[in-house]
Image (tube, rainbow, N blue to C red; front, side, top):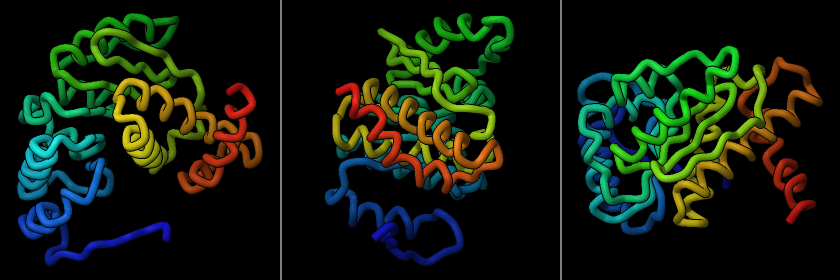
Length: 220
């Protein structure tokens, strides 16, 4: 099935979700948290509690969207766990307090040492989403150039979160997983745009992920 759903009482993430997570956590390898949530206080508190449980259980963790706002309140909460953060520039500022330089006129290159330093300070791998994605674990970095302006549509970042979670489940290596996920997600988006033009949706990107894998298999 495409979806396996576990139900809990409430209209949003709350203490009932935490209880469910505590019952299920030993059965899972990776949590991806953030997409589709909100930033009200109870949600943010629940996110932090889930991150704490996952970290203590040594689970792989991928943090995106509203979960990054919760994480910013206590960046030490996943220290020691295999963690990937997937912020855009605005979310990067929420986490670090740093406004990144513009990407124009090769300004994206000036972002690299900043991302590296913050990844080292936080103790996590950062996948900075932008025109050129910058990925670093604090010791090394990669720049991903797949992807296109059509992928600024809502939901494509959520797809990246899922792809990243899949890769880290396979490899248990946050840096390699983030690099591979950025490349595959961007390539799937490029394939979708070649077929449909720039008016694509997030599901168009999902549909092209298998084709993206076929492309890279030629070089393996």
